[in-house]
Amino acid sequence: MRYYSTRHHSNSPHQALHFDDVVLKGLADDGGLYLPETWPHFSEAKWQSLAPLPYHQLAAEVIKPFIGNVFSDDELAALTQKSYRDFRHQAIAPLKQLDNQLFVMELFHGPTLAFKDFALQFLGNLFDAILEKRNQTINIIGATSGDTGSAAICAVAGKHNQRIFMLHPKGKVSKVQEAQMTSMLNDNVYNIAIDGSFDDCQNIVKSLFADHDFRDGLNLCAVNSINWARIMAQIVYYAYGSLRLGLRDIAVSVPSGNFGNIFAAWAAKQMGLPIQKLIIGSNCNDILARTVQSGIMQTSPVIPSVAPSMDIQISSNFERLLYELLGRDGAMLETLMHQFKQTGRLDLPDNAKKSLQTLFCAHAMSDDEIRADINKTYQQTGEIIDPHSMIGVTAAKLYGGDLPVMAIATAHPAKFPNTITQAINIEPTLPDYLSDLMQRPTRCHDVMNDADSVKQFITQNQ
Image (tube, rainbow, N blue to C red; front, side):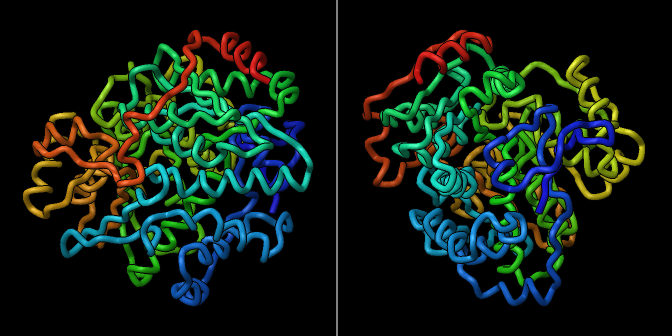
């Protein structure tokens, strides 16, 4: 399997890369995101044959077509088994039925209580395996609106061939999320607080990768969902859920900020799974909902919300979908993304808009609506649902129609105790292994909100 940048075109000097190079490179030299040259497609019979497999074995089968000959079957199987052995539910990604049509997939049974563990536990081990083969070390740089940071740090902490520098918007992640990140005191972990928004952090990361001398000199690697391996690993749980629901036609509802999770659902559909409708849930930072409804992607100021992991106005992974909607026209994609960067506005061509609205629908919620629906759901079902997941559940009920809907629960409610307490007057408790989290010692570094300051910090900590 070969990979191309979304901005690759006939006049582009950049060549196709193999899987291991894409994993280590993260962002393409032209600023684009990597995608496989073709989408693997499994027949219904093939999917049916995979249905009995436990999660880690299914993961190896789904991932196998994407990696070429980088790893043997046995090596890949060992990687997936290692990546999911510390999850605290036997099913790894259990499905819970809330009503006749609504099924919630709980993706918060990993070590940091968020869906990011599914991709990042695998990615940390994947980095390790590739680096061991190459006898190399890397510096991982990432930006987080909350969950990516703790999941990535947990995945690489203590690994001798990886350092991680994680940027987060100061004071704009939940206290639990902040503690999960900053209480990891391993020598290879550096938490960086930026006085700004997640988009500021993400833009700094992108600018560091755009500085090729700096990137190559320090062997920078991406851990955000701009890294293709993140998307690839997320495809697996959509396959797992679809198989558990009997391979019937379903809709999938996903609370989405950076578009990576919902794009993985789209990719699962390309692989032959019967996902008929993709539902996007947004908070008050509703750029994705507005884009689906109008065909115009236009930024606005980031508003802090009770669903802080979605406080985003630049959804990086939308570029991957747009590339597909444009018929993989990298030149047109590059022009549109340049316009978006310059003006904060992107008008989808008519064909792309029509394709987007045929498959996707979207719903945005205010903070008051989120809290009200957390309360309503608790009263009706006894389930305590975190604010991000609640958006997905509400959108599923509104847009699922006659289809069974698999709503993605992205985080444990105890990660957002203030919002849950406001909604139902009950404070959710952390699992026993994290019960002392808020009392653990922490370490974090305040760095100025500009790329040069972050570069200087990283250089000084080599």
